[in-house]
Image (cartoon, rainbow, N blue to C red; front, side, top):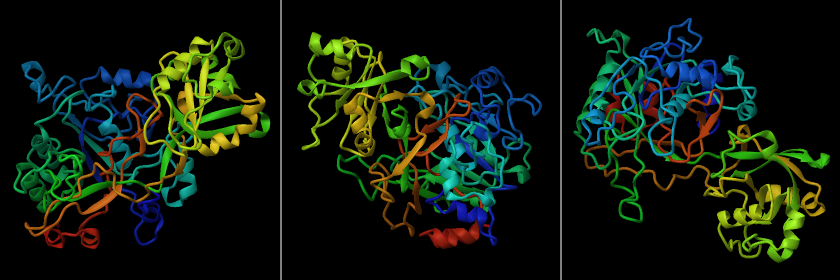
Length: 497
């Protein structure tokens, strides 16, 4: 919201656009409307209760804010996968409850909720409550303090149209676009959405692809489409930089969005309990193999001792003498050689050595401020890699043996740090296509990687997007006037009403 100048849009007297009286259709994997970012109760219990319903909950159910989610439809069902050879799976099983699936790391679940939050979430305060304040008075500093920032159009309504099951592909996009034009199916387009977000698509599509054709037709009916430019430019191994642009993003009258890095990015945090003069939060990254959400508080709190210099990286098994000093403690080890920046072994072997010596957790020191890849660790003891600034800050306490720390699943993604690749394109983002058809795509780029938005089934929690197709939700006021000012394709703009 800061990098895209959305705050200025909310506050500027001659615009003040917050999405009020606008409906954004999100054609995706569904939306977890029980999340506090959408005005829901923000509990796991609410999500599970809603999951068992065949219809959207009623306004008095306590499960949904009907001022945010007025309508919606699931065109496919949880088991749907268009690519499956199983008839039961490749056949849609629709109902009127477009609730998103929990992500499992392999399916589509969570994508639609994340996108919807970026488009039109209310925002979540640090205490987990829904932000209900005045958007026109929010500052950049206040936004950065929120647990989840507001969407681009926080007062817009969301129309979830679910086209993905919990896993796999879909053949239901065209049906979804029909629904966007006529949500109740009565043949009267007066209830159509104003904007449709399509963070999906195919690669290397022709410009007369049926989905793209429908996007152009919808524009003539007053529905503005924002679509993903694509995230597969690396087909040839080095980046197919200029020829890759898929449907429906290649539609002349749609807004095609490429993926860029913002000026800041979320980071995990660790709480320092002692020494007192260092108390507070420091930045870094949690290991991925350990289950922090299910761990008890005592499992996530510990006193830190430094590994002996003879085994400073933890790549070798600790001796019995060393183990006597490490038992029951969290062990600090250096991740890489400070002189070369190279690491001598992987994380799993180090965590296993610490655990075998009786250690209860691992703290990794680093010479890098931000790591592009995650740290695995192991599944049985927690761990945290410090940023370079945090490593330097805690060096004295580590050497003195006075450091005591706490991890918590709620501390993930709660920090902010500057981005080393600020305002550059993400390597996987498709750069577009040639202009022989009279226009060039994509039209614009927007921050998409490392964005925190609503997490399915998380109640009040956020999820950081690591893959880049999560950035296309955009301002609902992008109509005729704005199109002419930002697009590289002015002729199609003339077709917008």
